[in-house]
Image (cartoon, rainbow, N blue to C red; front, side):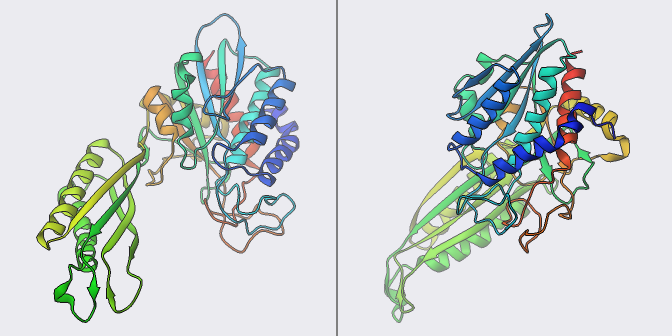
Length: 394
């Protein structure tokens, strides 16, 4: 494993930054302390900064040489609204907030790379260090782009990275094409006519209509799309009624839809609307159908994914660079990949054995109250960022 010596020498300092961020988690668009910490570190290393994109975003700018070529490296800063079960020293000090997805580690890895790049400028061009707010449901990447990220900081490509529990520490994974799904929400409100449950013939009961609808939605997955096209429809909430002897006036269904392509997403949304409206009409009821498109699919560009793979191979060897299995989870880095070519990779976080005494009883998986980032990844992730820059801006 070819970890950069200067980064390895600073690994304890980078880990202290990571644990400090972990202990002070901030939710989407509230990352004021974290952004201040990032800005102070970059400024101390002589890196010019720009603040305010997306609200709390920070962009560091490192230039060298005469080339006008540039690339962006992105890390997310926000935490989750989750009650941490860990009790070790760096556990969350903010009740109900937790770095349960490893964004503390992502920020620390990019800071580790920034320190080295600022001190050893073995490249010709410009590196933009993008510290992004609000990945967890806030669309911070979209907001930074709307605020002029790519106009103010023109770059030819952009790269992102996420830790991946269950993948061995010391490994990477990257592949071209779709690697994370689109994230979408739906809400169906079925309007009937309530009444006494002993006199169902005097009512228009929305509950059995809702049950038919839930079952019918699954036929979209099994009968309306090609079997080789990925798609998920999950009804995760059903709300109706307040008493056992009363037929309710209305019933609400809510849930999520995930796809890898916009074509499949368009089809699913249209068919869900048809099923909802026609199922209600067949029973004499009405409904409203709402469909919210959150994050688009994360799609790696072929050339940039292959380029990232070359960098990883030089770092850890070919056997430690894995095929990136697509996941139906979502990621707002997708917005950046819609605007610029680039690649989003995974870095193995291990199986949880790295956690110190005091961790929660749950598994070390993403969005789990017992999760903790593996600090052994910090020098490896920072080295990847540096080698990517040096190779891209040779």
